[in-house]
Length: 152
Image (cartoon, rainbow, N blue to C red; front, side, top):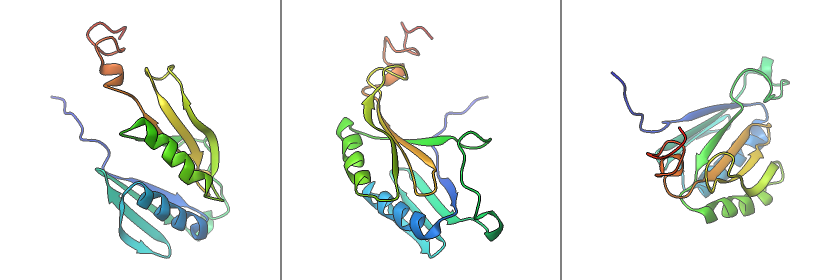
């Protein structure tokens, strides 16, 4: 027996710089039309668009350890945008965030999927987040890699 998932319910991020990260993630999630469900000085949990993002502070003994994408663990995660223009809107939002580092501005890269359009950034703690838009059904289109006539 196999099952088909209904997306990712939530992602939990642990951050060191609570003073910068919690406010950033609240602003960003609200920009993405998510709503704060729980909020404290050390944690925020926002939900919307069939997604949840929980951001909490790390324990004191780990506060001096910065995230490293080359170590074992999550390299990045990617939100899927509904419209091509949403990627540009996120870019404009992020340009106003002083503690965010944009790894690459909006760009098209057909190496991932036909019409793949994305932006990649790092939050104030260096956690990488991507947003992408793929037109149509992407790899599931008729001629896509997983379509009826695709390369597989």
